[in-house]
Image 1 (cartoon, rainbow, N blue to C red):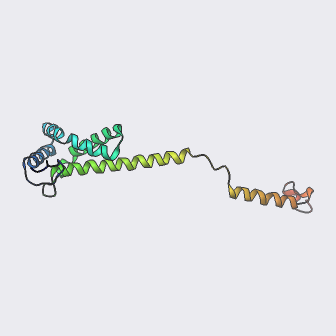
Image 2: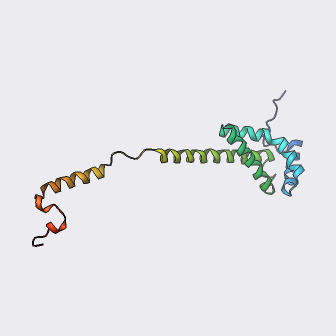
Image 3: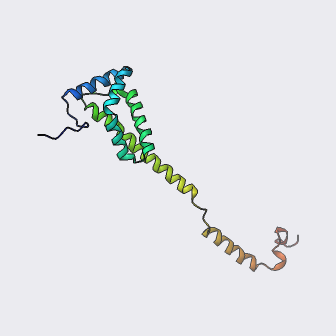
Length: 154
């Protein structure tokens, strides 16, 4: 007995492939009933794919919704000659999930940088202050009070 086929398999033949391809063709022209039927068939595998990448339950739900919005909008771009309908939907799901993980990571990195404390010690400022202290220490007492004392005769 052969093992059960994965819903993601790229097989070109079979009723599942043909049915799903037909549903996507109907979705491409705005058929809500076809979208509902397609959703019922692919929602669980899409959710699982997204959950495996995203890991966060709330984000998984958001990304899964985004996937189905994209499927609704892009169904006309599905080409059965290039792959199975399940592989097409799975690719959308995986790409959306990876994009979200990267976006969340960049956001967390920005937040960490923004929350990091200011540098307590500034090497350049410290050097300038030391040089200024040495320079003013070398100036005779009567001449260190403003520019008018720097020019003789004023």
